[in-house]
Length: 117
Image (cartoon, rainbow, N blue to C red; front, side, top):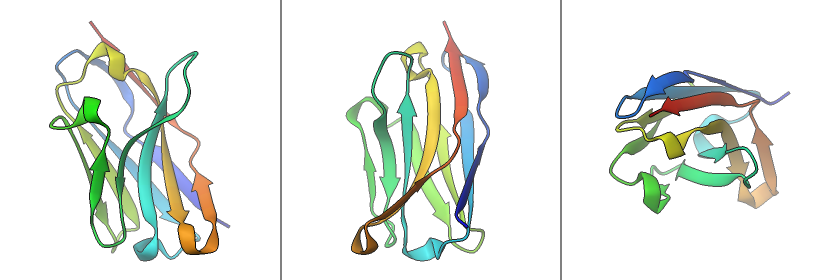
């Protein structure tokens, strides 16, 4: 059974920082592409950052230079370090694992990030 459990969300003032974690179980973590998505009220879910099995990272333009995605394969965990947070970063953040070769994808339950101005 696949489980992705996010943690680290919360309320922070603009300019502050948060570190999200996503602990995975039930998958071969090291071969997965891991991603962080977010969904704000009334908006579609969007990709924030992803990290491939080989370590290649990808970021949406609005978070480049502020957010850093990383993974610890020994701990089956992916992280999202968020700095210089802005009110427009407010959303529910979701962890995703994906294995394209098997058309497999799974989601965590989400963690709320609220940035006050």
